[in-house]
Image (cartoon, rainbow, N blue to C red; front, side, top):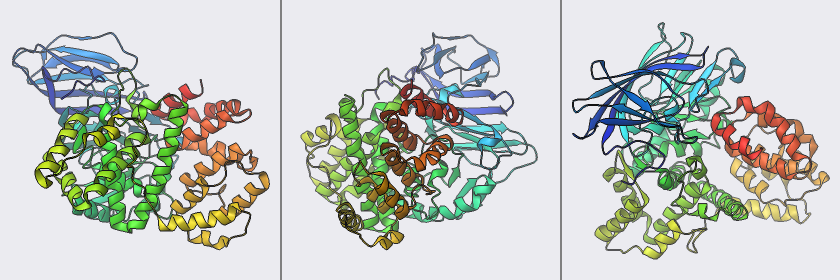
Length: 591
């Protein structure tokens, strides 16, 4: 496997295999005090184990049954942290590290009670992807290195901890909880949340965790969890992680979802009240195969996680809700991708429109764009459309089973898919097209062109609207979120104030509780100086932590008259509510 330039680990000399983690979560000091005991494998000549850390304070380290040993930190790197080198011997089987985290650990977000929905208890959640696990556990923080783990975690008695492992469904009287993850995972899938949450089962193997005030709403929104799992299994094989649960986190969570095994972390912004945004859950479920089961070997190969996952997500949604529903998602995705391509071109970042990335010396978060997700999806769909769905489905199913619990890089993938189609179907995949999709910028000429009948009707409505006719506005009552998004995306960029009022009356956009719709509308209000939405904009930016929604709004503010001052003023109020990942983005954007 290739060298991971985002990790100090030297796994060919000594690598971790199992983690025994014993921890106490301290909300007063905003720290975790822990002992990480690693079971390791090493070659006979190895005399050191190298781990990734960032901001950790090491109390002491011992080997096996508490035999003293030496250790040292390398000079800190602003991005990668500090390499921790531990002296080991040929008979070393276990390394015991007693340490504590920093109050500013990048993976940990400590929330005050007022930052939660219930307003009564504090909350903690982690975000380890891409290279932040090292800020709360000393580890070999590379997606190509897997390990199993078990943990004992002590928390305040009125709170419930959950991990990417076997989980409790109710609080106990001791505040101490045991966890086990028996399938090997990479470090970025280590996860912990601690808060006042309750559980509601959706099926025998699926359920929802949320703060009590949001639990009923969340469990209603996710009633199709079991059907999603069944649909996924019918496509690409048995679900490999036993349970599939979802926890709805507070609003400061910086992403739509995080595919932590057995427990998806989800943003509350998908609680739309009509189950229209649950394709995000299908996406995180699909990661149980693509990403969690077969993992990108390095962050340069991130598209292998996300391209497969978006493809799988669309297939799950088609299975549950029909072809036209899935095509609506594909049409909207292609629009987003084309906007991203234009943005990258304007910013002279066209090299980042290749699927295979070059992130050496850069934060892997820079690869979390529509390129990995949507260009990756259309690449895989182009193969399906050319050679037939039946052949492609057989390939994907075997790809997951043949490479289960292992890492995959782009070059190894090319060899695998070419060999598979040659040996199974006597078909030769063209190097030229594969290379064009993977290593070239932009979109190849054979990019699929999805078509949605429902969105065509929206376009007919838009044509009348934009021409000044008065279409039947009652049709909007029947539109799904996706149809409303298509409508908003295809309105003229410049709209006068009178037209903005007419639009607002038509769609009740300023009062919408749907975050996807709200974001598109607020971009329009900034651009067209529709000040009736100013208060909504400020509250949305302060109370939403998801970068997908925040980035276009802050960018639009920066382009508007006096917008920079307003953006900085709002950000000063909002920043304490944002996770490190979001703060990192907007500190740079607004500097």
